[in-house]
Amino acid sequence: MAGRFRVFHAAILSLLVTPAFIPTASASAVEAREIDWPELSPAHGNPDGPVLATGLDGETIRLSGYLLPADREGELVYAFMLVARRGACSHMQQPPANQVIRVVPSEPYRLSSNYEPVTITGALRPGLEKTQLFILDGAAIIESGYTMRRAEVSPNRNAPAWRDPSQDNPWHRVTRGAELSAQPPLEPPESLSSTR
Image (tube, rainbow, N blue to C red; front, side, top):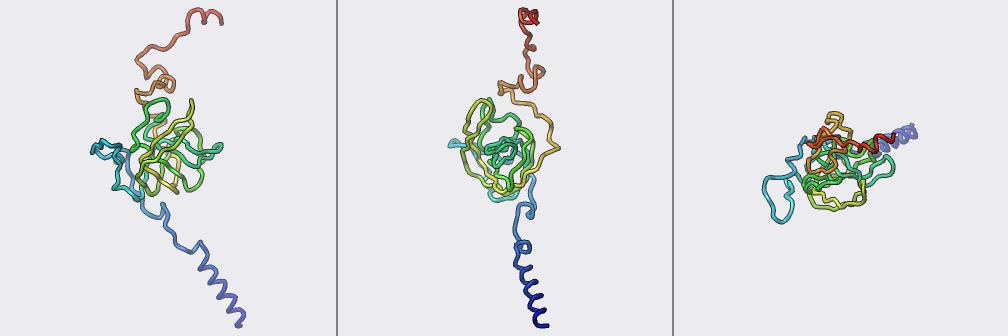
């Protein structure tokens, strides 16, 4: 009888000390506050650089944007930049640092396309950081104003398929066609059309 009691006692004790029964705080355990991009850029101007929302330091937030991979292997993304609009950082002026978040997901995210709309959840940390990205025509150094590590990342199926690109983007005719441009569509020269 004493032997059975010891085995039972040891089994119960081992269950209590396994990691599954040890309470942990995670991003999903804490209620996340949904924010939008304007909250990351306070209205006060700063002549020395971008103004960061330091009041959000350590707060668990949820924010949607567009994913631009920084560290990837095939379809798996290990770190990325989250930006407010599709096409930001690529062939146009970079957004201000307070409109870029460097994200390290809690587990690699399976990417379906660049600028995929996603929602991130986790603790936000303000602080300037530079990251080298390899985009269409080479490397670019992007400065982010915030970092989120161990973020939960999910596809944002509610995002519009495409937000209107900025008119600062010289490639807006390529990405959306002539309907976004005041210029007429390009016509091939007569000499080319007659050779086909």
